Amino acid sequence: MPIYQAPVDDAQFLLNDVFHIERYDNLPGFSDASPDVLAAVLEEAGKFCQEVLAPLNRIGDVEGCTHHADGSVTTPKGFKDAFKRLVDGGWIGISCPTEFGGQGLPTAMTQLVSEFLCSANMSFAMYSGLTQGAIAALYVHGSDAQKKAYLPNMIAGHWTGTMNLTEPHCGTDLGLLRTKAAPQADGSYEITGTKIFISAGEHDLAENIVHLVLARIEGAPEGVRGISLFVVPKFLSNGDGSLGPRNGVSCGSIEEKMGIHANSTCVMNFDGATGWLMGEANRGLNAMFVMMNEARLGVGVQGLAMSEVAYQNAAAYAKDRLQGRAISGTKFPQKAADPIIVHPDVRRSLMTIKAFNEAARALVMWTALKADVARRADDDKARMSAEDHMGLLTPVIKGVLTDQGFANAVAAQQVYGGHGYIAEHGMEQFVRDARIAMIYEGANGIQGLDLVGRKLGKDGGRAVMAFFNEVQGYIKDHAGSEALKAYVEPLGAALGHLQQATMWFMQNAPAKPDNAGAGGTDYMHLFGLVALGYMWCRMVEAAQAKLAAGADGAAARLNAKLVTGRFFMERVLPETAAHLARIKTGAASTMELPAEAF
Image (tube, rainbow, N blue to C red; front, side, top):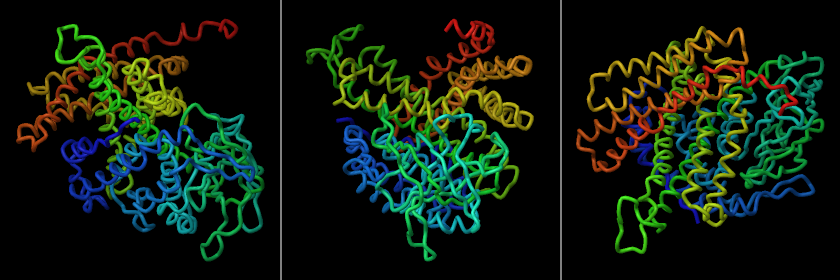
């Protein structure tokens, strides 16, 4: 059976030593987040994930969800009790506003706990993860009455939430959307249409499910300018807040999927369902983008989470599996063979995954703290800067962390050899579960296009220039440090590649937009490598400082940081040169063949 140990120590190192969370004490909720409180939260979350959720992961994969003739869905054995324990622990609302029953803790805590949940049981984590996205959209764009009606129950976990965008003929191109909304005399709307691929669309874990649904009001303009967002609950509410009659929304079927079998991915039928407009008419995408951005960051965390749990199992297997002798000479003469951890190629795989995981966790943490500044700071300039960061980094985190998370799950599976292909070891499930993260919430090619086509030039390039200035400033400030030289110099070279690629797009994409399309994915990964390299510099700096101060019993772990960071700089970061070379070739050979030649 697969193992999982929540990386609590690493999370605390990031919070306390790298990002110095105490510096955010001026923000609401942070003053209550003392190191002791944060440690207790992370320890309890890790314990819950390890002891309750991880043992259910294989069960859920084998059993899956069951769709019944009446449209109801039953989740796998043990999920209902586990969800009750999640709710009783208050895990859904740890970063939600206290005015609606949340704990108001930093968003960074939600992202860390989300990683733990997804590593332990990704299918299970999606039920609460989508709810948190719906909560965010309602909090920003919902009316006061809608917030009062839905947020307390959703934050408490009594009700869950979903996002309904995709239709059978309409995925990324939402302008083709056909679901209709007919105005009613009482101010509500009658929603009619079919949505597909709706994660957690129907289940038996909560009393009610609050669907956020994109639809077109009768007579609205064609295209994306005529789309509105509606709140459509599974059960309508009575005047006293109790549950009333069943609404006209039902699950037509559950999709048969490659992975995440224990999450009910539904075809949802809206047959004259009662819904209420959320936000302004014909501006539904503005409201839905709040949830989509939350979801994209959450999916990025899924990529990291699957990489982490796959790595932990592969590393444990490599230390135990005996096979051959080390090419540099026998290391364990008392054994029949050496464990495969002695082989350089096995170590190459493990070090590549380890180096990614630790930097990716830091990148998520950095961005989560920016989210708190954007939502909680009083200073307009600070909020704008934080929002710029989130807008720029969201496609990078979603695209890079899920692409690499899947690649890492495959690499970890490879460490097992033939045993990795056999279900009992759990590695093939990690590969299958990780694959979806590259596809949903905007396939990763779309993330590259979003980054190059929208984010680079937004507000005159303000966000990307701020990123360049921060990284360049760090390099300049530490250029004289001999201790950081092996880290800062490679980062400087990689940043130069990113700046060259950015300039190339500015000069070559406006006249030939296909150049941007052909280079978007490479640029996204180039950007991601630089961001991860910057995280490694900051982690190494913090580790060196803590070692100099006595290490507080963590010398071995901190020294491992220094080596892992050096490996990233030597063996991973140089890939920026290849990405730059590919970008500079443009789109000519990519677009030259006629369609019939494929």
